[in-house]
Image (tube, rainbow, N blue to C red; front, side):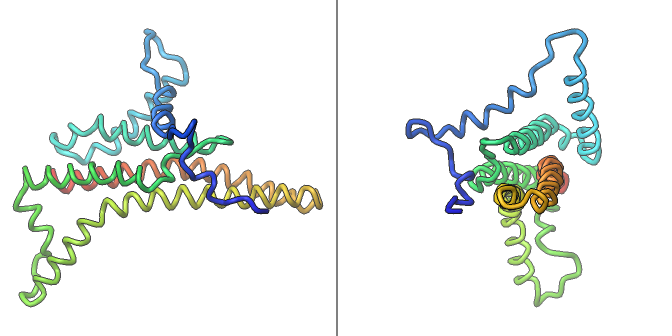
Length: 226
């Protein structure tokens, strides 16, 4: 096969214009505002899942941290819906783009750090130097802790990008192998097809887990600074 494995990760274009903005805005359609007195089953399930996630994620926060509830819940819904939509055939997964993930990670991380320096300046500075550090090691540890602080948004973005991209590549490779084997021997292709189905189910779980992990880490950064 001469097919490019990374062709599905290229930014889609229409008449030479990137349509990523339209793709990013599409998940909003999946979560309409309820306009009826009694919700249907889908809306009730969405609200129940959102309430449980909010309760679990925001219970550790102080009052200042809980003011971020709407931001964090919007973030997890956006990432999860984008990941799930990317599993549809002939679709584009925006979270496979490192630039987009950095665009989400850096502002949120910077906001938590600024919040910490604004409200808990001494505690934020104390994180750069562990208690009981020998005097000779103070300069080196301050540099190491500063680098580890600055690398947090990069780790957030790379983790999400790598996990989603790896899953899509693996599905692409196994799917191509299944199609090739079906034209040769249907019996041999059957186990590969079963593996593909199981991998697809796993990718659905990974799509939700990665959205939760990304938001949870931002929540923990916020907890350390409020």
